[in-house]
Image 1 (cartoon, rainbow, N blue to C red):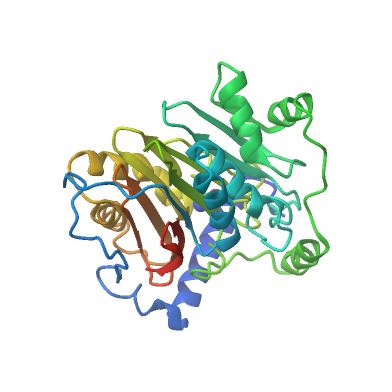
Image 2: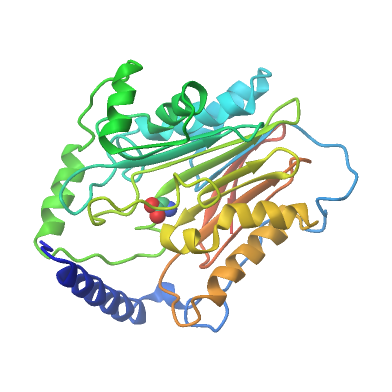
Length: 339
Ligand code: GLY
C-alpha cells in the first residue's frame, strides 16, 4: 500500500515504467510506436459537413463500445417518441445494472483499497447538467446525477454527500463489489501493479449520445473509472466538458479511455466547438485525438476514444489505437462500428 505522497509518486513512476516495458512487448503497440496514431475511420458520412443542408434522419443513439443492450434500450424509448434525455439515462442504466460489466456500476472494479466508486453525469438539450463523483453503494449513479440536475441548484455532488442525497431520493444501498471483482482484486493486491492493456483495461466507460424526434440532443456518461486507481481519483467521465458535452445548437460528444488525458484538453467540449466551426462529427473527433497526441508525443501507451453526434444525426468516432468500437441504433437498425 502507498502511505505517503513520495510513495505515491514512486508507485506511479514504477507503473509508468512497467507500462512502457509491457507495451514494448505487446503486439498491440504497432499503432502506438508510429509517430502519429493509426486511426481508422468508420464514418460512412465523413464528407457530410455539419453545415450541409440535409434532412436529418432522426432519431439516432450512439454509445461508446459495443454495448448493444444499452443502445437497444435507448432506441426503444426514442422509437416511441421519448426524449433523448430519457433515452440516454435508461440506456446507460442497462450497463450500470449489469454485474458482468466490470467497468460500470454494479460489478465495477474497485480502487486500490477495494472500494467501488462510481462517477457519472448527464446533460440535456437546455444545457442543464448533473454529476456525481466518488459515489459508493449506488447502482445507478446516472440517475442520481439526473436528480442533482433536476432537483438541486448544483451540478456536482461528491462522495458521502452524493450518497446521502441518493438515499434521500429512495436509492437503495447495494454492495457493488461482486464475487468476481473481489477475486480479481485479491489477486491484484499480490503485486499491486497497474498495467494498461489497450482496449481491454480501458474499456471503462459508457458514454451515450442521442437525438430524438424533435431534434433535441442529450448525453450521459457513467463509469467505475480506472481499475485499482488511488482512492479518491476522479476521471473525465463525470466532468462536463471532458467526458461529456452537449450543446443543442450544435451536437454532443463523449469520451472513453484514460480520463486524465481527456481532462487536459477538455475533450468533449473541444469536439462540440469544432463541430460549431463546421467540422463533421468525424472530423471533430479526429482533431480531438490529434490535440491529445500532440501533447503526448512520447507516450502512446493509452487509449482514448471520442464519439460525436450533430444536429443532423450524423455521427463519428475516432481513437488513438485501433479497436475502439461504438454501437449505433437508427431506423435502419443496430450497427457495431469499429474505429
Ligand atoms: N474514462 C474514464 C476514466 O478515466 O475514469
